[in-house]
Every structure is written in C-alpha cells, then in structure tokens.
Image (cartoon, rainbow, N blue to C red; front, side, top):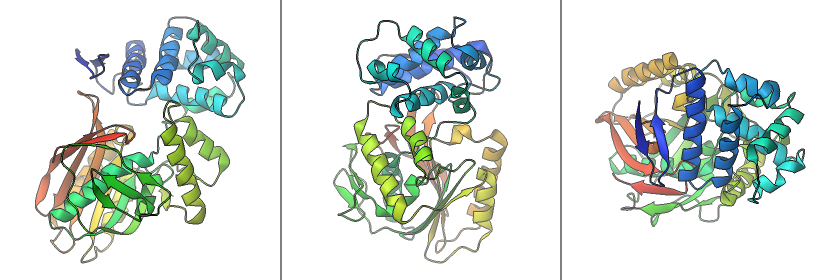
Amino acid sequence: MSEGSTSGGERYEVIDPQATGPEAVDRAFENQVAYCRDNGADITACVCAGLRALLDTDRGGATMERVRRWAGPPLADALPLRLAGGLHALHLSGEEPALEPLYTGQRVTDVADLLAEVIERHDYTLPVWLDGPPQTNEAGRSANYAAALLWLADKGLPSQFALNEIGSSAGINLMMRRYRYDLGGTTMGPSLSSMQLAPEWRGDAPPQAGVDIVAARGCDIAPVDLTDPAQALRLRAYIWPEFNARFARMDAAIAAAQTMPPEVARQSADAFVEAMLAEEPQDGVTRVLMHSVVWQYVPEDQRRRVTELMEAAGAAATADAPLAWVSLEANRDTHRHELTVRYWPGGEEWTHLATAHPHGEWIEWQA
C-alpha cells in the first residue's frame, strides 16, 4: 500500500477498493475523514472521525458491532457514509436534539461519546441505513454531463441526445433538460429555469453548440421517489450539511419532479444497458450511456458485461446513429473525480475532459 496526499494536505492511504476485514474498515473511515476535509466538509469529517474512534471501543451497540465486523469491502461500499447518512437523518427529522450542536458547527468536547450515546438510543432503527449504498443524487453533477454533450456535439455527433443513465437514484440528472447551465460563459438550457447551475469554471470554456435532449431514462437497483417525503428525506440526509446550495438544488429537483417525474426503472445496470442497446437506434440521434459516482457500487461482473455490450454496440454504430459513453467517477489513486468520454465511431478510447468537484462546486476543463 502507498500513500497519496490531497490538495488540502490530508493524507489518504491507497488500498484495494475490494479489500475486506478490520484494517480495511479502519482505513475506509480514515480515508473518508481526509476526503471530507479536502472537500470543505468539516462537519461530516468530524462525524466520520468520531465513528472511527468508536471502532476501537465496545460502544455503539449492535450497529457499531456490525460496522466493526463488516463482511463486504467497506471502501467500495462507502460504509462511513451509510452510517453518517443515518445520523444526519436523525438530526434533520428532529428525532435527536443532542446532535444539534454537532450539525450546527458548535464545539463538541467528545464527539465519539456523543455519537455512541445517540447510536445506542437508536440501535433498532439505524441499522437499516447500513443495508444499502448512499444515495447521493446531486443535480450539480449534471453540469459535467452538459459539458460532455457540448463537446460531443462539437466533435460532429448529432446534437439530439437520448440519455440513458445507470445508478440514477431519484433521477435528478435525468431532468437536466429543464436546468440552466453557465459553464465558464458557455450556456445551455432554459434561461428561466428554477435550477440554475453555474459551477466555478477553471480552464477554457467548453464549446458552444446547439444541444437538444430528446429522451432521458435511467435505472437503479433501489430507485428513490422524489414525490414521497420520506424518500426525499433520505436523499437530503446524504447531503453534507456544510453545503446549503446543495439543499436548495435538492428542493428545486423535488419541485420539478412533482410536475413530471423522471423515468427510472428498478433494474440492474447490465440488464438496463442490454435492453437499451437491443432497441433500434434512430438516425440523427446520439445514444448516450452516462453515470456519475456509481461505478464503484456496480458489481464487477456487471461492469464487465456493460463494457462488453457497449463495445459490441459501438462496433456497429454509424455516423448517423452514434453511441457515446460519459463517465464521472472517482480515480481511486488520486481521489479526484474525472469526466471521461468514449464514442463510436471515431472516439473508441477514453478521452479525459475534466476533473471535477464530486458535488458540482467546480469543474476544471482539460479537454
């Protein structure tokens, strides 16, 4: 194992994302603390550090015991964020007033002791948060998708796009046709949209192009219904409390879903992609497979199958009916999220377009 540093001075230890066992659990929490601090999420870092301290005790009831004995790969499973989401939900719902000082940035003398008491009080309800991966659906990430579509159109692909997203969660990014983007001065989308996305832009602006999204659908193994208040609370719980803008974007997405909910099927990634590619492509439309911060949660056999399906379909793609693949995923060596693209015919190899903040705060364009 080797070490790498973040731009904020924190230290990560690069490990196999599929590693298991107590040491991997420790490292997952330590890396999460460093990751949060590097991204300006000091409250969430404090929560994860408190949970890490509990690993070395017998506090926290059955919930923490399950965490200590985690059977799967804790890094790939985002184990720290599963439990942190459950604790944040207790605060947001008002069920646990003791968390108020922690989540409002006040000084807490012993965070680990506070968390142990809270977890023990809610030892029957918190474990459900460990049963599935975090749902971090974030509209800000769609700015990366928008930039990639502009780049693809500039490459000569048909500027009418049919979007197909895996790991869509609540489908917030599937509604991007309704969002307004300002990408370093390059604009896209309706000017009067209630969702205005203008990430800090670094580097040259992406090319200006006329882009039209003619279809958008997605899949998730556990779709979230934004029109259900309980499920909407779950999404809000995974938002780091430091970022007020993210809560505002979530509220705007929830409002948008009330009028026309996104189309999200309960389906595995490989089954969704296979069904998508089995359909007859339309001339003049670029089919796009896209995903953001989800690839690590897709089982390896499904990742392999998706890649095989895309490459086989790409080999048969034509200039009139091309195929593209847009990915915004973490580089596990650098802990940076990278926007990369492949397309057929003509761009079969991955092209690195940008490095981006995981929640859409900034994009560094490098295409």
